[in-house]
Image 1: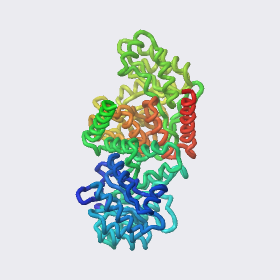
Image 2 (image 1 turned 90 degrees about the horizontal axis):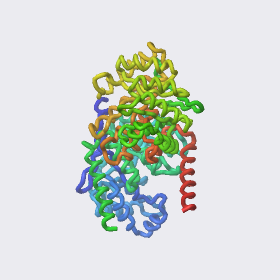
Image 3 (image 1 turned 60 degrees about the vertical axis):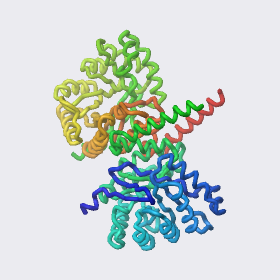
Image 4 (image 1 turned 135 degrees about the horizontal axis):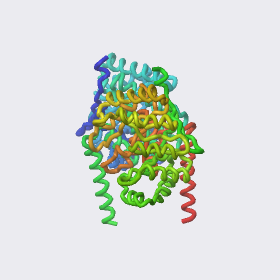
Length: 299
Length: 299
């Protein structure tokens, strides 16, 4: 068990760029924006075969500080596999950032992995036997990494114990049955909306602490979920991420376009000793000052 | 040892108001502002016997959301005991919030405790034998609570192990030799400036986690220290406090006048399940909206 507990590093790549997720590294920001869920206009555009909005989404997230871009093309009544392949090719033509290929449709994941040039992160598999059997062979075949959710068929477990048990199952199946390295499994500790139940973040934080100490694998979660339905969502996001990082979260699928949230992550990187000499923090501050001075000069 | 590990509650009182610090309660914000350190004009005013600036400091901190006010009158070449008594009386005439009586001079602490109407928090004692012997009898005599720093005569220990050892010493001496309840000892886990050494926050966080699990006592720290000398201090403070709260910090002597910092604490309260149904969070949001609407209407 000793080597399982050591901090793992997950290597992702585009054609030209490598990103490493790890417990002793700066937090990995996975931009959530390229996703039609809740974006009616974007859905209509995609249905009409118009992917042009992606260009703006890539630009905003790259400028905001994303390290990886999630790409989800889940639009009902479309050929999701085809749309996903088009979107991946488009994103890869626009940026060097690695991609997180996001779909609940196995055929779309397969098409996306085949089209992708690099080492992708697959989003996602659950602890259900048939999902593990469908998705893990693809992950292995394409030498990808995979986000795994410790929930079964019925419902999301509300106890950390159950999430740890399912995490153990996922890691054992992936490593022993499919030969996937533990380093390539990124567990989602399941961050639920605080507005529905004020105990859910404590459960997520406990799950994170235990996954870090018991398995040493990397973790990611959908950080924007936490503030769903509450006012002042950005303030909640900016508090949640430093808290989760303290508990062991090493990446998040998140809003990478909102400075207050990105800066909170960068502050936590500095405070956790992942920004040597505070060089990145100070450089970012100087860049903001220079930009402000420029805006004043040209105003 | 079992009862020592249970979460303790520290009760503070003014003449009319009670504040309880505890691990299952909302974070206790101790306003740091009434302190002449680094405030040259305020120092000169105090030397001239002019305490009027305190009125503004009380108002800003009460409006900002402080639960307790720290009062420090450490001005060189003055009668600190006399100034402290005047300041405490003035603050008590202006607000119902309890006071944290802050001095390194034993005679000033004694005069302050005698003048104070309520149950004060004394700031602070160290693990040094002579300091414990000088200050703990005053704490006991005046039925106060006390902030204790786990550092000895020589220097601030940079290892969590040493801080835990000195915390144990302080708690044993205070409880066994002076009959002070463990609930009335508030440990300062020592948050140092991140700009000097990027490992110091990890050490503070580890110290907090261990103090919570090994002793269950409350904790406070000088939160503004952490960002000393770095740019974008408010962003660092707003990230540090939620992280420290996740590790077990239950109060801080802090900037209670800067909304971004206070709101980060309130967000962390909600996320940690210390704000039932999110009532306080939602109420604060509505109050801000109402205020904004009023400003628009009168503009």
